[in-house]
Length: 155
Image (tube, rainbow, N blue to C red; front, side, top):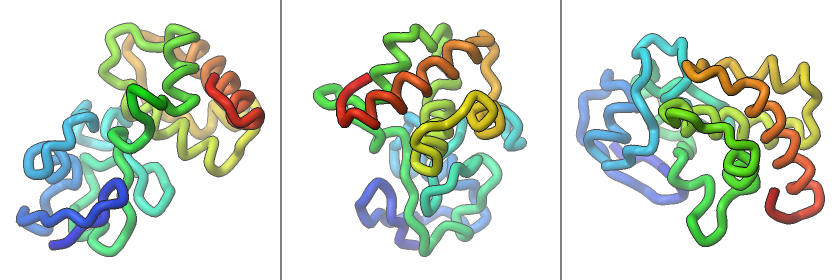
């Protein structure tokens, strides 16, 4: 099966019922997307499918065959980080860091839809769980990234 991942056509040979998460990690070696709970509750496995945040641990690969998939690997680079990645560091969001790739992908989807989100918008969109409880820092980082993106620069 051909998949469009991070702007590239990739071939997957997994069973069609295999969750997208395991195809990404085990077959395509895109290990930035994390396994958290396996029941779509925590959001550590969040990726974008046609611009929408999706929990990849419960999404069969067959459901995304003709769609555009974007993983954390495509968000930014070390040389040119995404404003969210810069804001995450500035606001010291990560503690253990395990949930961060999913959090960043959920936040990126939010900013794509609402470039200047309110606190209520952030609270509604950010359903990812963080064991470390850095939710206030997440909110501050999203606001910082939104401001930077509005100005056209880094956070």
